[in-house]
Structures are given as C-alpha cells and as structure tokens.
Image (tube, rainbow, N blue to C red):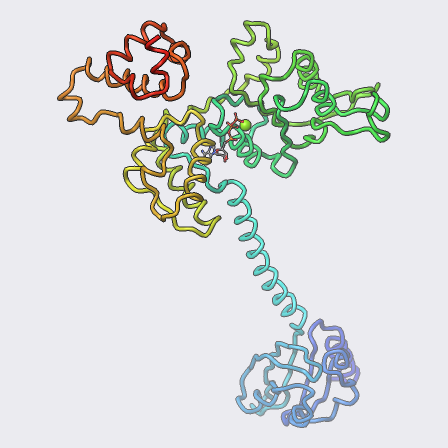
Length: 473
Ligand SMILES: Nc1ncnc2c1ncn2[C@@H]1O[C@H](COP(=O)(O)OP(=O)(O)OP(=O)(O)O)[C@@H](O)[C@H]1O
Ligand SMILES: [Mg+2]
C-alpha cells in the first residue's frame, strides 16, 4: 500500500468516525484510545483530545463511562453489547467488536455507542401518559355512567322497562317528545333522563311550568324582553328561557295550561328556530330540543278549541305515555324498597315495612302516583317511633280499603249481595262521620236523600253519628 493510499484510508476513517451518528471509538489491543468521535464532549463531557491516549480502564475509573465495553471485549475476545451510563447521566447502548491481525492476534477494538437518553425519556413519558390516559378514560367512563344511570330511577315493570328503552332510543335523536300521564307518574324525571342521554347533555336543561306562571308573565319568561319593552321591563332587558335553552333542552311542563296566544308564538319559534324578544325588532336564532309534558287530554282540548291543532301535531312527534302507578304493581314493590332505603340513608334511620303494611301499600291505588308514594313513606318514616312500620302507621284510607278487601275464603263463603251490603255500609259510615245532614250525605254519595235515610235505617247505624237528629226529623 502506497503512502498516499494509507493517507487516503486514514482520512476516510477519520471522516467516518467524526460523521457517524453513533459515537465511535477505536482502541489498540490494550484498550488505549486511538481514535474517538467528535461528539465525545457532548456524550461523555470530556474533550476528544483528552480521551485520546488514555486507557479505557482509567476512563472507567474516572467514571467517564461505566462499565467499559472495550475492556469486556479484551477479556472475552468476542463482540459485546451493553448499556452504559456516562458521567453526565446519559444512557448509552454500546457495542464493540475485536479486530484481529492476519496472524490472529488482537490488534484493535472498535466500539460505537448510541445515546438512548432521549428515547428512554420519551419512553418514560409515554408510559406516564399511558397511565394518565387510562385514569382519564376511567374517570370519563364513571362520569358517563353517573350521567346515564340516574340514581334511584325505578323501572321494574314491563311497561316502565319499555319506556326506559324508548327513552334511551329517542334521547339520541333530536325529536320533540310529548310526555303524557297523570300527575306524579314521573314526567319530569323522564324529561331529565332524555336530556342526560342526549347529545345536548352538555347544554342546559331549562324547565318552565306553564301552569304556575300568570299569562302576562309567562310570555316574558319564555321570550325575554328588550330594555324598556314595557313598564317595569328593566333597563337591561332579559333573556327568555327559550334562549337559555339554546344548545340544550327546553322542557315545557303542564303544556296544557299554555294560553292560546302563546301557543301561536311558540309554534312560530319551533318552526322558524328563531325568536323575537318582546319589544325587539330583530330575531335571534335558537337551537333547542323540545320536551313537553301534560296530564291533560290534549286531543280533547284540540276538539274543544282550547289547544291549537297545528301545535299539537308539531309536538306529538314522539308521544310517551307513562301509565299510572296502580297499573304497574311491580314498580310499587320496587319503589317501596328504593324510597325507604333512600330515606333511611338521608335521615340515618333503619326503618322497614312489616309484611301487612307492605301488602296494604301494594293494594293501594295511588291516585297521586309516585309522588304520593314518596310523600307518604317520608311521613311514615319520620313520624313512626318504632323501626318497624306496621298497619297502625298507615293512613286510615289505606288501612280501611285494605282491610275491606275480601280474602279468598271470604269470597267463597259470602254472597255478592252480602258483599255489596258491606261496601254500602262502609260508605255510609264514612259519609256519616263527615257530614252534618242527610242532604250533605246524599250529595257526597251521589244518591238521593230519601235513599240515604232508608239505607241508614237498614244498617241500623243511626245511633252512632251526629246526624241522628236530622234523620228523625
Ligand atoms: N320511576 C321512578 N323511579 C323513581 N322515582 C320516581 C319515578 N317516577 C317518579 N319518581 C319520583 O316521583 C316524584 C314525582 O315525579 P315527577 O315530578 O317527575 O312527576 P310528574 O309526572 O312530572 O308530575 P306532575 O304532572 O305533577 O308534574 C319525583 O320525586 C320523582 O323523583
Ligand atoms: Mg311534572
């Protein structure tokens, strides 16, 4: 090899060493550094010039790096790979291999190290983020569950389960919903349930009871007003609740009470999706989902001209009729348990119903539906002195209706005539206790006064009540 060839090879070698993306180092067979990449300052914190000539064992002692991969190659005479830490705390993956001369003797060791500090850092951060992400996912899941599974909502009967399924199905679309059912069956609960399960759950659920606000005020509550729109309108004007429901859900409760003039205005808003505040000349866009509820027969009201047919059609897109509680005994049983448990938790009590009281409550007709059930249980739970609530704690109406329910043996041994007599007598006694005259009794019972007198005599109960004198007249 000519001298110029040697020079050329050396130049190329140096260039490879300096420009390699990995840090390269070449030592002789004893581990004395002969060539080292320019990045040694950056990686080891030691200048290239300081490293050249030093032995790797010395460098290892000075903790420039440790352990030394070159030393390991000298010991093992075979390629090696290991993790190495530098003086400045960097983490390197180092590989080294021996170079043998033609006669088989070790003549050099070449090592190259790859800085993994950033990658390890990224890995650590990635792991932390993965853990955090999992935590967030869990939290979101929990919140979602809390949002959808409304606490204490009872739907055990087939009727309510079907309603629950329908509610979940229609909640996600934007259709207008009309909730129908007697007072206290859960129309408000279901309206909120629909909102919670809808894509508008992040928006507001705005509720107005059309029956509880005087007509004059209702308009400004619904539509809002501009400053100075009318006497007493205030200087700054006011946003109406329809505007407040923008991006959310507007719940019009007791819709049947909405006056005809406002029905026309409401229809306009629903159709145009924009409204004009009272006293304003401009319109503002509104985007809300409408849920209306009523315990009145809107179809009948339409026939009577008390409710606009066009508005009725607009609202009656998805009607949901919630059956009265007396038609779903399975729910009564479940509600009794849920409500007592909730009350016990709220008041730190340990009340329970005995079997007879439970039976009586299961037989009761609940004209006031779930609200009546809740109120009655609350009254009994907070007033009963004992932990066990028995028949004696029940209101008399419930107790009596239950006690007068014939048992199956009674039905077998008693004629229908006798049974009707018993019922008649019970009603007469009931009326006699409340009325002062036989005329009043006749009015209450919906029969004529002579019939009242006759029946009182028949059942020989005249001596027991305060109207005796009036009968004998
Ligand atoms: N399925 C149910 N599970 C648990 N609680 C219920 C259920 N339905 C109704 N309730 C409870 O009964 C009470 C009355 O319900 P809600 O106010 O929704 O009735 P409503 O139909 O809107 O009555 P109104 O026509 O008088 O406004 C509320 O306290 C509600 O929480
Ligand atoms: Mg309601």
